[in-house]
Length: 174
Image (cartoon, rainbow, N blue to C red; front, side, top):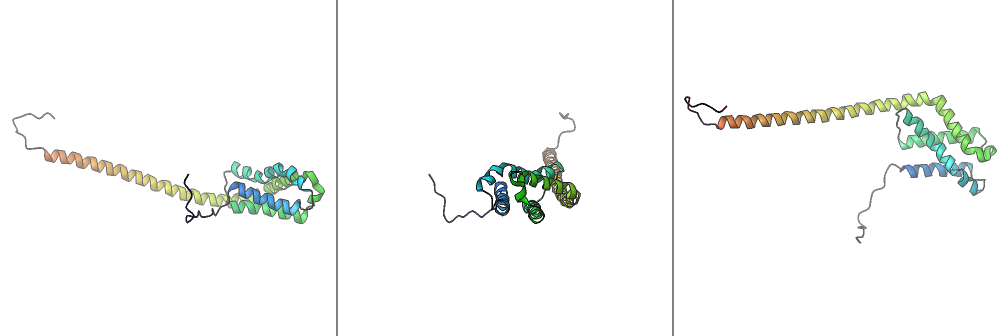
């Protein structure tokens, strides 16, 4: 079995993987809202917490919007800060994941148009870039088509020029 070369070190990925981003959000929730509760409560609520923090992605996907992982994490983190500042999470106990989901849904209902306008603007810019890339590939394809036709023309021209002079009395096959 071949061993990896220790001199070759793989560069860390600048964007966190989806699982890593979810784990970071869960760790922030656990530190902020489950610190005083028994550890079993967090594990009991973990699945619903994952559901709550991934719900905004379905809202974005339904509207064909995208955002960077850092922007997505900021959206969730802002809501967590608002809950910590204005809510009383200890009062909700086992219902905290449902409360978090409801807070996220309410925020998207009230501020979704602003977010849509912000992300739509980015999407339009990306669409223009992608259109120019498609345009460039179309130009490249068209140029290749013209090159093929020019090559075919040169081949035909070369055959016609290489024909010897024919006798005017003799009929041509063509």
